[in-house]
Structures are given as C-alpha cells and as structure tokens.
Amino acid sequence: MAGVWVAAGLLLLGALAGFVLTLVSAVDAVDRDQAFRSGGSARVEVKDGGEPAVFAQAPVSGKVNCTLDGPGEATFTRYEALYTVKLNTTSWVRLLRIEADTPGTYTLRCTDQAGSLTFAPGDGAGLGTLIGDLLLTTLLPGAAGLAVAGVAVALIIKRSRHRNRLAAQAMGQGWAPPHGGGTHQG
Image (tube, rainbow, N blue to C red; front, side, top):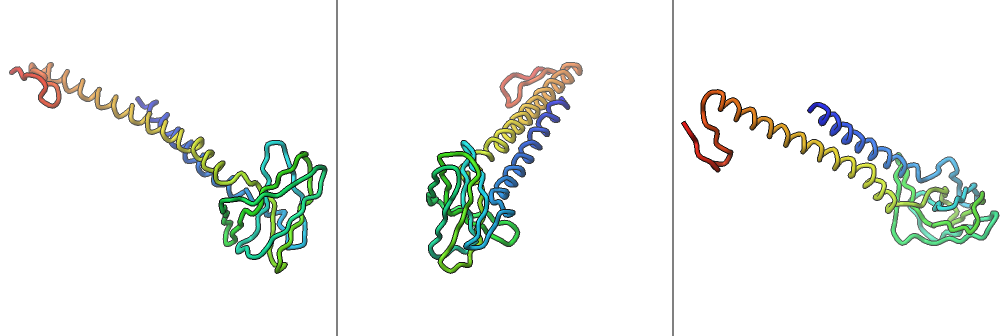
C-alpha cells in the first residue's frame, strides 16, 4: 500500500516539476543576451522546425522595420495574438515571426520610428506550445497522481470495511452491508 502512495506522490511531484520547467522555458523564450537597441543587430540561428521570433521591450508604439540577412530568403509575419513575457521588471512583446527557407545563421536588424526600442531574437513558439507543454508536463502526470491516490483511498476503504466485517463475525455478530442493504442477525 505504501508503494501506491509513493507512486502518487512521485507523479504529483513530477507534475509540479514539469510546470516549473515549462514556465522557465517560456521565460527563456527571449534571448536577452542578444538584445540590441534600434538600429543595432543580433545573430539568429534558424533551424528546421524552429520558430524564431523578434521581441521588443514594452511598450511598443509606432512602426517597426526589421531585415534578416543570411544564407536564404527570409520574411516576417506579424503575430495575431499578443504574447508578452515579463522578466523581472521588463516586459518583452513578441512582434514578428521569422520565416526562412534555409537553415543557418542570419543577422537580424530592427529599427523603430523613434529609435528608442530594444529588440531581441527569441523563440516564437508562444502560447500554444506553452499550453501544450503544460498539458503534457503537468496535467497528465497530475491526473495520473490523483488517479493513483484515488485507487489507494478506495483500497483503504475496502480493506477497512473488510476488517470491520471480519471483526464483527469474530465477535459472533452478523454483518450488514453499508446503507441498510441487508438484514442484521443477532
């Protein structure tokens, strides 16, 4: 029986760890080491299946213009949904999805009208991936842990009832099923 409780505890602990690690990966979405002021540049590694993005420190106002120079053709697409990552006291807004036809290292350059924004490359997988990761790393192990704990509780109740019935029989008393479903012999 103790093994069931240990398994349930480990699953719930795994769910908590998965939740924390997923949130940490969301925070790591912005490559702050590559941050640059308007007019500057950063290196962006484009990989097959990756979704690099351009982030800017909030608040973002005015028009933003970015270019990407590298081994292939690249385009930018605006994100439809606003996605913000808050790191300490700085908020980063995901602005553009980078779509490149050739994997490799590119040079990202961005400017804004006022020349005051700070930009950074990052991972644009965003909210959909975050939710998917949370489901896989938190909810599934958590639900499994709760299910194992539920089985353990059911077994404890069943064993307790069985012990009570055996004790009643040993004392020469009849046993009645719970909820008055039987007759009592005396």
